[in-house]
Image (cartoon, rainbow, N blue to C red; front, side, top):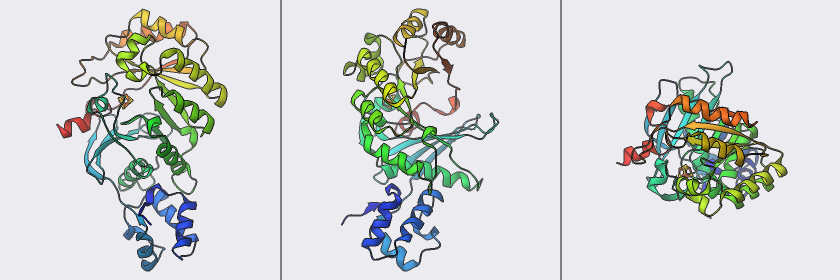
Length: 351
Ligand code: SF4
């Protein structure tokens, strides 16, 4: 029997392992709470299970935390982490802290789901580096647990409230691990993060979007659209050659029909794609969709040659969409002073 990653186990799986090891089954739930709710980093921190039982459990279960290589803090409170995994690969993870700017506390973690990414979007530092491997559910959940552990040193009541699967990687190309991570993070004996407070962001992997609609875990879905014409989107998001816009839009309709959920359409704005015609094309494309548009002025990434657009142009772009009856917002810019665009920190570190 192989060693299993403890942070990737649900309570019922731990109860079953306890049964197989001849331990009392309630130890499984206790262990789950220590790992997923209290976010312990090592066996030594577990208090109400005997040393002998812990020894037996550690013969089947592997508990490890991510190694923090770097932390950057932005003036707006955003913290960006570079973590090293056990095999030496590095991933990034961001904590966006809205408590200073809004009436209610909101602590959102942006997690990575893969090391690198095979999609290769033109504006993305992660894409430039190519795909290395998928993360396990334990490694995805581990980002949230390690950040929780770190911040609780300063604030013992700290609790992550929202998750966005928008870090390095395409979440729907690591479907099973992402869905397991969602179950773990949602578990009421763990972090208990509501399904509706988690959002998967995809560049449009059509078959997996339909699978997600069928499985319907009640999480939010954001589609990275970025352009309303195939020729342009082919350049920005190469996945578009496989699943072009007409098919993607049909799939979005089907997703909304099956789940009754509104999709968020993400549009990264650069100095080059904020013209009136582009806004009009987008309004035409989204006509009749149950959705909302989120405009994101890009953080410039070295090597892509793309520049940040002028704020006036963003306003005019949003106005065209609003005039066409499309709900639109502009994403609050976070961490622009700390390489907040996905993959930038890892690139810099690896040189
Ligand atoms: S934007 Fe997302 S899907 Fe595109 S290359 Fe970067 S990580 Fe991959």
